[in-house]
Length: 326
Image 1: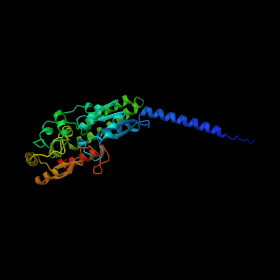
Image 2: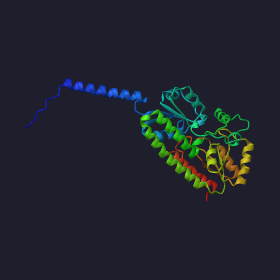
Image 3: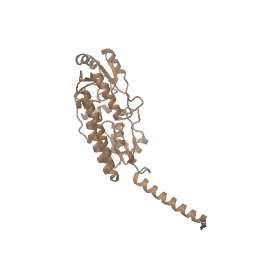
C-alpha cells in the first residue's frame, strides 16, 4: 500500500530551522563561555618553547597552546607587544619559567590569569657558581638586564636541559592542568605519564652514551648546560655567562685556549639562535672544531630535529663525538 507523505509546510520548516539555530547558538555560547575561546579547549599561553612543548604534550586535545616567543627569537631578549600582553591576560592558564624572561614575569604578575604555572617552582633550581657569574665580560656593560636578573638570583633557570628535572616540571604542570580543568584530569595525568616514559628513555640514553668518554669537558657559547653537565658527570665551560649576547674578556679567551690543551677539548659548541662568531673565532685560534649544541630555547629550520626529544638526541650525538665516547 502506498502511503502518501504530506508535504511539510513552509511555516513548519521555518519553525524547525529557527529552533535548531537557536539550540546551536545556545550550545556555542555555552561552550565559548566555558572555555574562553569558543573551541571548548583550555587556552594556555606558554612563555617559550620548552614550556610550549610541555603544555602540548600534557594538554593534548584539551588545550589550545600559544607561545609568547616566536620561533627564531632568543627568549632572553623577549619584549612583549601590547597585543601579546592582552592575550596573556585573557588566557585560562599561563606556563612560564620565572627569572628567564623578566618581561614575561612582569606581565604575568600584573595579569589576572587564574592559573599561573611557574616551572621554576616545580623543581629545585641550583646555583652553578662561577659558570654563571664569572665568564662574561669583566666590565659587565655587555650584560643585558635579563642576565643581571638571573645572576643576582644566583639560580640557573635552564632546567629543561636535564631530562630528570624536566620530568619533575612536567608532573607539576599536569597537576596544575588537572586542577584547572578537572573534567579532563585523567587525560592530563595519562599524557604526563607517557611523556615521563619518553624523558626517562632520553635520560637512559644520555647516561649510557656519556659514561665512558675520552674527556669530560665541553665548551659552549653560553652557560645553558649546567644541569645537563651535572647530571652526566661532565664539566661545562662557557665562553660567556647566562647571557648569550655578552662578550668574553681577552683573559677568558686565553683561559679557554689553555684549558682546551690541558683537558683534550676538541670542539667549541655554538647555538642556533645567537651569533656563532665568538665560538668560531675561539675555535680557529685554538685549533678546535665547531658544532651545534642546542639549548632548545626555540625550534627553527636550523634545529636538528622537529621537537624536544629529537633535538636532545642530536645534542647527545654531538656530545658523544666531541667528548670521544667509547
